[in-house]
Image (cartoon, rainbow, N blue to C red; front, side, top):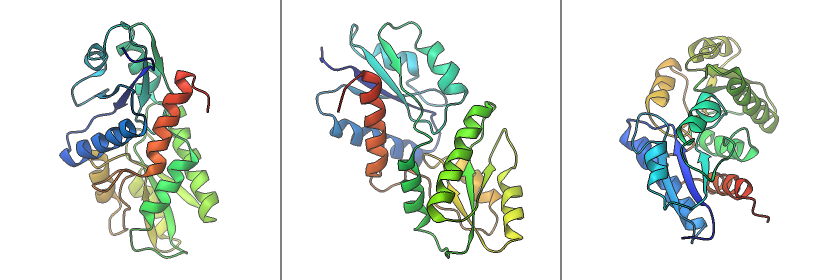
Amino acid sequence: MTSAPALLAISHGTSSPTGQAAVEALVAAVARRIPGVIVRLGHVDVQQPDVAASLDAIPEGTPVVIVPLLLSAGYHVRVDLRKQSAGREGVTIAPALGPDLRLVDVLLTRLATVDSAPDDAIVLAVAGSSDERANEDCREIGRMLAARVDREVTVGFLAAADPRLDAAVAAATARGRVVVANYLLAPGYFHDLAVRLAGTSPVAPPLLGADEPPAALVELVVERYRTAAGFSD
């Protein structure tokens, strides 16, 4: 049995093979960053193993830190993870990944890969949640991004909240050319929806793709684990 708590990374889950591979690559990079720690990947929806099965695969008696690979603290973080891990003792649930300035760093890196100009209007595409606290987390990322680029950033939601991305893009287009920043973890249904709703506006890639996971994102996951495990720097 390892002396350190296991790290169970829990993603939302996706049916996209590209998205699955991107998340798996992130977790593999995290495992390389903390050798000697049990690192596993599970999912709160869509994919298997689910949270309960993932916990069962970790040796009994090993404490576990669940790190949600989720960008905001919505229903999955506040309710689902607690319910689905309730049968296992010694489980600590770390906060969601966002909001965090390192995510803004990755957003800027992804934005730099699409055709854009310094005066383009920016719309931030986010998934949206029935939990308004999660939506506010996303708006905070929009404010943090705006501070970095020194211009207005409008948030457009893909589900559950307004304004919808297409409406946000249309409103921003009235001020000039629009580029869409992509506050989604990996390719999948919501990314495809963002591309459709953005119309002719270029859409930056999600935070994860077919390339190496951004170092800032790897470090963020590791930090969430270490803080929840009670490790000091």
